[in-house]
Image (cartoon, rainbow, N blue to C red; front, side, top):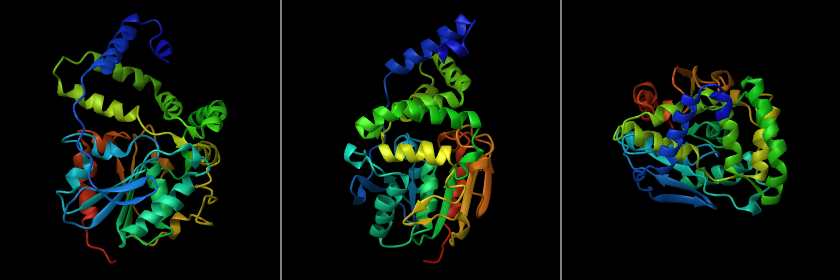
Length: 330
């Protein structure tokens, strides 16, 4: 990909490699400490970020670690919400073991998310980011919640570019034998496909990073985000297959065929208030893939930028705090 994107321009190639070397060798700032666990089902746990307001459970994607919502000092959506009349809770999916090979995406909802919601003992506001939003929607269809917030959450997977869907199908064909042997789909296999969603930007960001003057605060910000993006537990074999084959390949959610707890999930049947957040400039999850229910909020920020970017607080954090802090019936 690097050779293709910098073909005929050795200066760009050198700049990108310099950025990569800096990223690999630079000191890391310490991450914020993990918050206490208040509920656990198997490997999945709920962490409590404090705050005096109504509880809001944030469901991250199965892809990459959950701490993008608590990335670094001054860039933590959850710690900020705890000062804004909300009690944020974070679902940590943990790391799957090979013996969980048959637990698909729906199984994570049925066997981990729904039991954790019952363990909390009261209806909470449910907020899901990326694939976590897809899963939160399914949970809200099966368990009473105060409200549902979908943040860059895909539902109509047929709205993804055809080339991206074909890439992911090809990835599964290549990775399936290894995944069958291991019982899991390694994160590294998925990351290669994410790079290909926007290869020009992938290379350009390392070029720009390599040119930053030493001591620039953007260096640690870049490192924190890239460390998150390049980290994460594997997917179970069945979750990888369902994500790449059934969701991206077959759009079973958009076609009304995704079974959770024995029945198809129908977004139109969600009874609680819904806020559906999508960005018109999201290159990872197109706005057209959103479920299209409830109150729509449309942004012009990137998939990750809406969570940790410099404009995220005004564009997303503040409206989200207002939405989540509203008193609602139990």
